[in-house]
Length: 103
Image 1 (cartoon, rainbow, N blue to C red):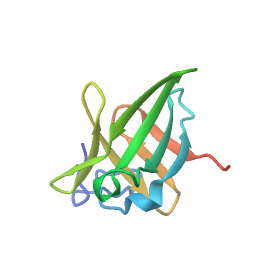
Image 2 (cartoon, helix red, strand yellow):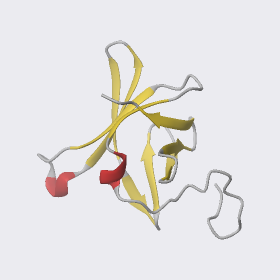
Image 3 (tube, rainbow, N blue to C red):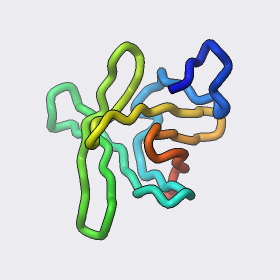
């Protein structure tokens, strides 16, 4: 993982961002699974989830968590999330860059 203070962040992505900013559908141009980020208002505190679509009909749901300022999901290992607000690019540490899909 990179640090926002050392200058090793080539995407200028932020680890601190509002989850409402990243809700929606995202697609990878690198062949990683499509994802959807949404708020489940039926859960306590309106928890946010990431839905991974690996194959047709095969979905995995993971809650988005935060630890020491880093947002992450645990899908058979921890993946951190960062977001570049200028270019609207979401990065998952294990899968790479994602671009928003327009509905």
